[in-house]
Length: 333
Image (tube, rainbow, N blue to C red; front, side, top):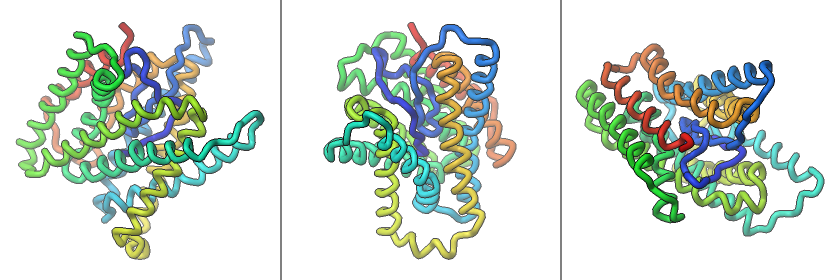
């Protein structure tokens, strides 16, 4: 699901409280900054705004790639393989660092397995679902994943599900349902429900990854874990691509699709993930979350202006309701 690695995925006491960029599934380091010089604060805000904007472009470029003849498996393969050298470089640099103990094969296998769940499966479901629904509805559906994390933490980790979180979950999905009903009535699409189901399944897959990743991350470190998970997911995508006969399509793939793959890998994945992480270090997680909450609105505006997707006042109302819900589930009590 357009999953973007970050420095840390950790369920805290409120398991869903972390910076949001699920447009690419990318929670980042939950580090608060209480005081900061003016220049550092300003640069942090700029980084958060630009990073959020670049993440918002993800669905737009995927839609453009689909229009140019790409299909989900091909596009996911291009995206991950163009980004692969960077993850290998990060892992190599970490392993060359001082005081780095060798990793056990069991830890590597776990990281690969979680990469299968959190990056390969989640990304594939997201891209497939995006074929059937607008970028607006896809982004909003993904944006509600903190609510899913909260429910999973309640079911499996014994976390408390209080009235605030329950209200947040209700608001999140009221917003999605409102936008879904409008999109279905405006487009007359018979596959809108299937598209929402696939994107929701993507959000669930990534939420499960967040819950399960913490123990392995604590053993080998978040940076090594993220690199291994991304490398593993790239291997799985390559196997899927080869098994479905996709390799034969590479020669016939339009050059513009390759360009979109590069943009998705670098401009909409790697670059904004670094920007968001650095913004958190400079201005804190809470401020970065607030800025990131405008991401779905940016995607909506871009989808309307660039893709000419249909929209209405109810689309914006649904987006506003869901953003309030996510703000409740991710904010401090």
